[in-house]
Amino acid sequence: MIFKKVIYIFLAAVLWASTVGADEAKRVVSKNTSREQHFLWKVTSPQATVYLFGSIHFGKPEMYPLPGVIEKAFTLSDSLVLEVNLERLDPVMAQQTMLQRGSYGDGTSLKDRISLETLGRLEVRLAQFGLDLEQVRHFKPWLMAMTLSVIQLQMLGFDSNYGIDHYFAKKAIAEKKTILEFEGLQEQLDFLDSIKDQEKFLDYTLVSLDETEKTLEKIIAAWESGDADVMEKVVIQELLVKYPEVAPMLDLLLYERNYRMVDRIKKFLGSGKTYFVVVGSAHLIGEKGIVELLRQDGLQVTQL
Image 1 (spheres, rainbow, N blue to C red):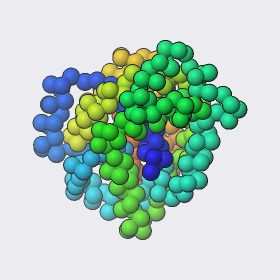
Image 2 (cartoon, rainbow, N blue to C red):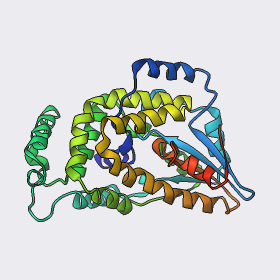
Image 3 (cartoon, rainbow, N blue to C red):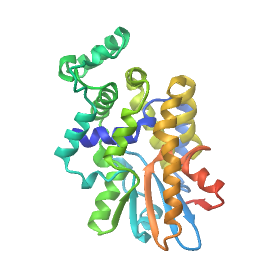
C-alpha cells in the first residue's frame, strides 16, 4: 500500500540525494565480492549482546539471500528492534492518521505556502507522474515530498517489500520473536510536522528526485560491502556539500533520534538478553552515528 511506502521513505529520508563518483562506486562493488565485512556490528556488555544492522528500506530481489553471519545474528537474538513496526499497524487507520497530519484542515492550499518557483517545479514533476496539483492541493509540503519520492522509487523498481525492515519483521513474526520499536507512528509524524522550513524540504526533494536511482545504487553497494566510510561520504558528506541547507533537517531527522536510540540500546545491554536492531544505515555512520556514540560511552563495538 502507498501508506507503507510513504512511511518507509520517511525512514530513509537522509538517503535520498547525494552523489559519489562512478569510479568510486565501481570500487565498492569490487570490494563487495569478498564479503569480508557487513553493515553489521556487535555490541557487548557483561549482561547482554546487541547486534546493529543497517537497513536499506527500499530494495530489490537481488539483495537476497543475506549473508549467513547476518542470519545467524538474527537467529541468536531474543528480540527484533525496529525504528517503527509497520506490521502491527492497521493500514486504514494509519493512512487516515497520516493524511490528517499531513494535510491542511483549514482550507489552506499548498500553493499558499510555497513560492511560485517551487510551485512551478512541483507542477512539472506532478505532470511527469500523471498527477494534477488539484489532487494534492491540501497536502503539506512534507507529505507532498514523501509522495513524490514514493512514486519515483516505484517507477525505478525499488520496493519496500524487499526492504530489510520488512524482511526481518516478517521473519520475526514467523519465528514468534518479540518485536520492539524505538518510535511509533505519531512520533515520526511529529518529526515531519516539526520541520521548520517545509518549502525547503519539498524543494530539495524536487531537485534531487532525478538522482534517486544512481544514489540508491551507490548506497546499496556500500551497504553490501560493509563500507561505513563510503556510506558516510555518499549519504552525509557530499549531501551537505551539494545541499548545505538540509543540515538542520539532518539534525532533526537523524542526529537527535540517534541519541534517543543509543539511550535505549544501553538499556538493552543491561537486560541479560540478545537483541537484533535494524535501523536505517544512516543512523550507524559518522561521528554522531549510533556506532560511534556507543564507543564514546566505552562500550565494545565490533563490525562483523
